[in-house]
Image (tube, rainbow, N blue to C red; front, side, top):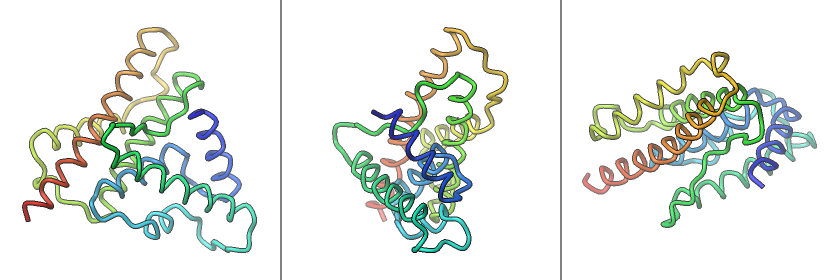
Length: 180
């Protein structure tokens, strides 16, 4: 199911002239959502191409998919059952999956920054470390990833880390917002 969702979003973004990959768009969205200042309009403004026209059918389909993604992701991040999953390809070659993971992390950090999130010094030591790790993943050399079982497991571990890191950062920001 997630793979089809990823592929549909990737296709709609390309048809709509959006320069972000599905992974980057989702990472950007998650950065906006965990910032405690989420704004659907600001996120869509970052995603939509210049010259967006509501009458363009491809852009309308893309906008509808993005709105649905916004709602589903906001719900998953807020869920007590920790059902949040980054939107990443699952069936692609390892190098492609690594590239998507890298793009997701870059998008997340961009979204956090663009939304006016807290400066790094305002985070707990654990959240700062998670941000640094996400930044390092964002610099991953996807071309250096070999197609083998060890690399596949390492990538799976990074995705699991990513889920925990995002939730840690979200909770850190929520806690700090309630303190002030």
